[in-house]
Every structure is written in C-alpha cells, then in structure tokens.
Image 1 (cartoon, rainbow, N blue to C red):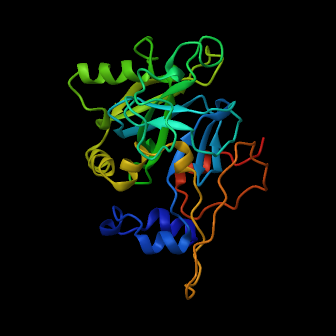
Image 2 (image 1 turned 30 degrees about the vertical axis):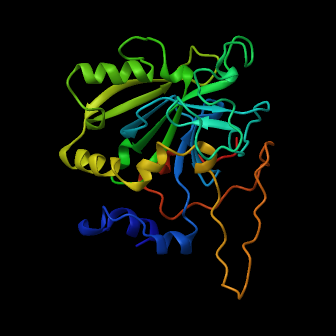
Image 3 (image 1 turned 135 degrees about the horizontal axis):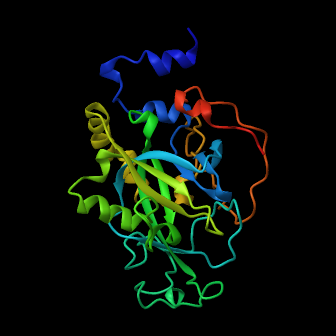
Amino acid sequence: MSDIALFNKNVPDYLKEVELDDLTKSLSGNTGLKRISIRGGVFRLMVNGEEIAKNENRAMNIVIVNGAPKVSRQYYAGKYVPGETAPPDCWSNDGETPDASIESPQNKTCEGCPQNIKGSGQGDSRACRFQQKLAVLLADDVHGDVYQLTLAATSIFGRGDTDKMPFQQYAKYVGSQGKNINTLVTEMRLDSDSATPKLTFKPVRFLERDEWESARDKGSSAAAKSAITQTPAQTDSKPKAISAPKAEATEEAIPEPTKRPSKKNAEPAPKKDFVDVLNEWSTDDA
C-alpha cells in the first residue's frame, strides 16, 4: 500500500473530521492557510505563498461553507506587481473602517477616504479595491481542507444570466429559493468574455447528507474563520522556523516582504496529503 493510499482511502471514520493540532502544524511547518488564486486566468492552489498545483479548466466546482458578512477593502500605495506578497498599505474587513492593526490608515472611514473616489486608481477605478472573502471546500473532497477564495469587484457585483451570475446575485438567487448556500455544489467559472480574470457562479446539485454535515462543520472551523478575515498576504505568510530555546535569546528579526515579482523556483515536491481530486491538476510550470 502506498503512502498516498493510506492517507486517502483508509482513514478511520472517527478520525476523518479531526483537524491538524498545533503540535503537528508546528512540527510539519503546515501553519499557513490554503487558498485558491485565479492569477493569469488559471485556478491555482496556494500554500504559504507557493503554488502547489494548478487547473487550467475554465470551471471548477466548490462548496461555499462560510463568507465574510461584508465586502472588504484593500489599498496598495504602489503599483500592483504580479506575485507580490507584501500586505496592503491599508485594508478593512467590514468595508467601513480601516483595520485596527494599520499604523497609518488612509482615512478614519472608508466612505470618506480619498482612495475611495472614482479616478483615484487607474482610469476611472478606485485605488482602494473591493473584495469578498469566502471559505470553500473542493466539491470532490468535502471532507478535506478549507480554502480561502478572494473575489475581486468584477466577480462580486453586476448582473448576469441564471447560469452565469456574479457572486452577490448568485447568493441572493439561492436565498430567494429558500435554500442555504452551503447545501449546494457551486460551479465557479472563468468568464471568457472578460478581459481580466472574472468568476461567475451557478448551482450544480444539492449535497448528500454526509457532505452537508461536513460542510456545516467545516464552516465553523478555525480555518474557515481565518479564511474570511485574513488578507491574501496574511494567508500566504510563511511559518517561522522552529529553533531550540536559548538563554536570554532575542527573537530573530524577520525581514518585511517586498513588492517585487516572485522568482521562478524549481517545481515543489508533491505533498503527501494530496487527495485524489488533485491528481487531475497540473503541476507543470507552463
């Protein structure tokens, strides 16, 4: 029996819902939250800022288990650089006031902020961008890990057909049918008519009982709560290395991330906790 088969096929029922504890996370370095990126119009699985797999299909099925109740905001003072890992210069989880951790907020409120004025960004756009943070599961692995999915404004607002809806329209549509969004498999599809990466959504099917029970439980997990509150930069932060304690030792300074393109590294070794659903994902650099 291979290691992959052991972890994918033979987990006892009483262990299937047990999440990684702090001990295992610290020893394995698995402290970062996983997220799904659509950079370059490709679905990419990211862990600690590193791409571990990608799927170039135009559509992907997920289960939405939690979501930030309000649209968030984030602002970068400099020009966006693909692959940047630095945190935003200013952000807000509720879209109303800057996060308390920000040393130099752009304004006391988001509504009156100069970065919230049309034209403050490129062209007629706003320099401070809207985002919607979701916690999702892969539809083929609803008992697996929680992923963060961060939607840009083009994927949140607007109106489309019932089989091609932006997220707010989709959420309202599901609610209007008297159903909960975490009871459904949702298709998210890259809009081929959009010049920039844009997702649309539609319902695919209802979850089976065991799938729904898992989705319900995963939605209240610590990972799901982190997914809807952390910025992508926080999600991608790498865990600190563990070292033996020293007498009167001071914490080693960690350099701040810089806004520069990430270098192409050698292809990372495959993770042994991959589930079967990831076998169809490509890990090619192309």
